[in-house]
Amino acid sequence: MKYLSTRGHADRKQFCEILLEGLAPDGGLYLPETYPQVDAATLEKWRGLPYAGLAFEVLSLYIDDIPAADLRAICEKTYTEEVFGTREIVPLRKLEDASTSSARTELYLEALSNGPTLAFKDMAMQLLGNLFEYELARRGEELNILGATSGDTGSAAEYAMRGKKGVRVFMTSPQGRMSPFQQAQMFSLQDANIHNIAVEGVFDDCQDIVKAVSNDLDFKRKYRIGTVNSINWARLMAQVVYYFAGYLQATQDSAGLARTEVRKVSFAVPSGNFGNVCAGHVARMMGLPIDTLVVATNENDVLDEFFRTGVYRVRASADTHETSSPSMDISKASNFERFVFDLLGRDAARVADLFGAQLSAKGRFDLSGDAAFQAAARHYGFVSGKSTHADRLQTIRDTHARFGLIIDTHTADGLKVAHAHLQPGVPMIVLETALPIKFAETIQEALGCLPARPVRFEGIEALPKRVVVMPADALLVKAYIAKHVD
Image (cartoon, rainbow, N blue to C red):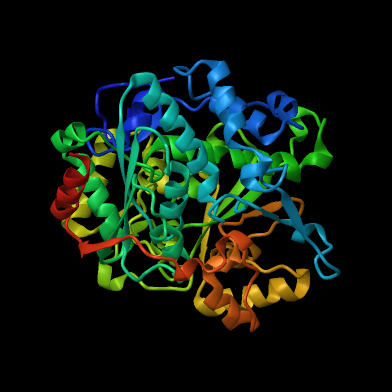
């Protein structure tokens, strides 16, 4: 399996090369040359596999430069009940009561937040940490990871990388834009290889810094800069696995059907940077029987606007809303470039123009008149919707009243939008993104009580903080990295 850049860089690389590289040299994102195909017979073979075994089967389709025995061991080390708190790793819960008994309301919640930092990012980040450690040891090298977080990526990366040999983490985050719990998770870490940088700006400023540093090829090579954001293909690839796991659980009753009778499911995904739902796109391109991919946004509705109108319009920092689902307060969706690459028939020159010249000059591009966009909903199965603060509060209250279940604010966005796209006979799986304690203030506003807090996080907000604050300036971040690496 070889990988190419969405912007046309000539080199074709193997997995372990792009694992440590992040962005391609031309600023593009890596994708496999082709998507491996999975048929109905293979899906049936995979039923009943433990999550680690399923992960090995999916990942081995993309990785041929790590020996199979080693890759299997990495998967088994990563996806354990001890790390994720449950044998199933991503258990599926059916949301059903007396008022939701018809086929139209076959609705599920896939629990992705049982890991060390209580967010879905752990599903990929724990694997990434083990892959980094394995490959760096094999090469006898070190890696300095530069990342950007709007809330959950940072803590998931830092908990996955803390104490790892040969790895340092430099994580940027928007100052004051994360929940107190999210900030405490990151800033309370005292490990020498973890560095937190609070940027005076919004998440998009942090993301721009990561891209600017990654595009300085001399600096990137000198200081061995890698990424853990979902611009790194390895992280997105790991997320593909839980789409297969969700599908296999939701269709358990249809096991053994003939190929022509394979049942489809839909997924609703809270979306900011497009990485989580892009993994669903990849799974669908591999042949997983996905009917619809529901993109759920908050008030920062750049993605919803595109899927409704064909116009991708980046907002300025001042126009990026601060919301009660802060991990989605994003107006530049990095992974969106991967989907547009496929949407436009893998026309790298056109993608380079759209995400380079046109966004730089106009802050937008318009595909509304493009035949590819007009066929997108039919061919790729995307629909979208928007959720507001009032919607989140109502969805949290309704879910608690009907199911005795407390959900976080981002999952509420996904559930709210999912209801608008339910179809008879097609299970709808909503991807949970975090446990509610991470957004306790909004839960209290909605329900009048605080959500449960895991014992290991008692008093975390009062712990000493280790963080440096600086302006949104890539040069300052590069100087900070150089100082702490040399």
